[in-house]
Length: 285
Image (cartoon, rainbow, N blue to C red; front, side, top):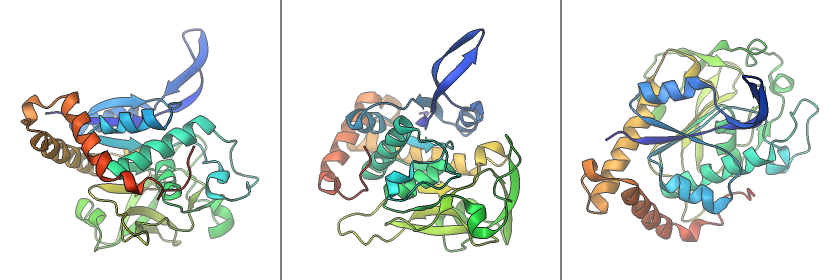
């Protein structure tokens, strides 16, 4: 079967063919990356409430939380830096909600750039709001309206190293001015830029009793959809296929006959098992 991969989107004013209207938008490179890796791409527009987020994630086999604007620092209890962008309230609430439900339900998660920051804030972490103030240079930024390249070093004892088994530094596409500061609970840093900036996180030990992410949980600060290396998306789709097959078996369905009902039943079963954890994550909406 082809796993269904949800992709979060922008909510903005857009113009096309003489029209101008509020729109749910997504750079097409994300869709291409999912499709090339064997997934079926589904766009997830912001604006739904927490129950819609839960039901949506329960129907998916995998989730990509995409890049985009800065997260409102009120979400992690910090005053606004002069360089922090204006808040995008609907998208912040939606991205945090779908991310938290993916963690609760064990839905494979690939969080990219802003998405990695969402993942960290979701787990109670904080952000550097303007990285040049911290590291003293701007090589994370990339050119205006484009992407640069910088090096990252991957921890050899990480799950990420099993996907990207590079020796030494790996060149990655980059465009960001914010980054992880205090690491969120249940996450561990697994890649760094040469200046020490955290460039990737995955599931790690938790200090909260009864909580621990399982399955495929990966955040990268760079933009793999902008490069020619498909391995992160391929790993997500493979994890989604494995989970879909396991869920189909759990509800008595073969993978060939496993439809939305099968995913929903499995999602409800998992949701029931983790109901006691619902107060673990940082407030989101």
